[in-house]
Length: 452
Image 1 (cartoon, rainbow, N blue to C red):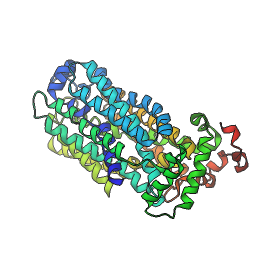
Image 2 (image 1 turned 45 degrees about the horizontal axis):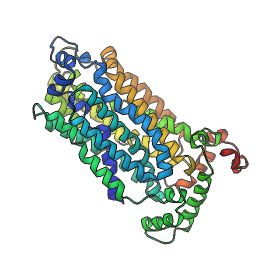
Image 3 (image 1 turned 90 degrees about the vertical axis):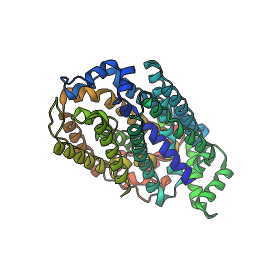
Image 4 (image 1 turned 135 degrees about the vertical axis):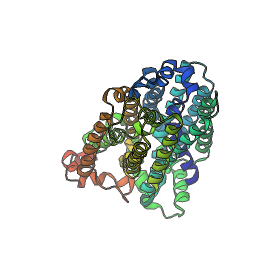
């Protein structure tokens, strides 16, 4: 289970990070689909910060995240009614179709349609995989296993950057190979979804109680699972009494979880990490790096992020390449930023929301988390190149301000969840100095009839 589960993490990650800004620094790709950007890129008199300021180019990337946002909400009832595996398989099939369409694209419409299908896969995959990991892991390993989602994401980033760096030398069809190779993890994710056991929580919630107990005993390696099984059964009984999870999640007793489901993914994107990782080749070229050097530098930042999971920028010229010393300084500073993200907001943004919701609102809560993440990713992807052109290095001061805000927020409002059984998470909020004032008293929570 563990190996296949982590492979699926990698597949979701690779699609999330695969290709767009690697191939958009490749001249054959730009010349075919974005000739205006191609001419601006090769115009020595053009302001470096504005060479890639093109809404069509931004739409190529952001269309994935908009599609992912919508599909993540549609994935919630699928995940709840048909199981976590069903959503994983749906995501894999959508990835496969999108990768095929992108590789065969002959016009911009095909290219964006393929990206939309990849976005649907992202929505289903990001909705189901963190839930799957949280429900399969024992309490003492849940955080570590969920951090593997971030580790797999960083490995996906690094792999995608390596693919782009290699395929740039294959002219004129290297970009097709780069886009088409996304089909490989798509197939792996689909097969993995078919082979994975369903989570005991999902089985019990859907009335397959005995099968749920058998799976629980198998993954825990012991028949002594009475306490955990009883917690799951009670949570499932409450979950099945809830007819409208999205309406239920708005109740005061779920307010702390809802706030975290919105704020954690939003803050994760507002660190500015996507601006660094998605646009790395473009960003490095905007700063004056040469074409190959920009892809090489993006590979380096991907490698640093991957390494950091395991264990901002100053003023530049607008129409010239950087000196060697400045180039090294830029890469070092960006690597430090990526390093910090890898051990903080990278895993935190996914781990916390996936483990804090009670079973009756877990699928809905994860859908909100994914939708918020993809919404902010879409906004950044669509607006970043224009903001970079208008604000230049000031855009990174904007992100620095948000990092200050989110640091204070976590310190003040987020309790420690490490080692707490997932079905007992609600008790944390009742002990917290602030959230206990927001949540209703326990007697008001006992009557289930008004929650339907």
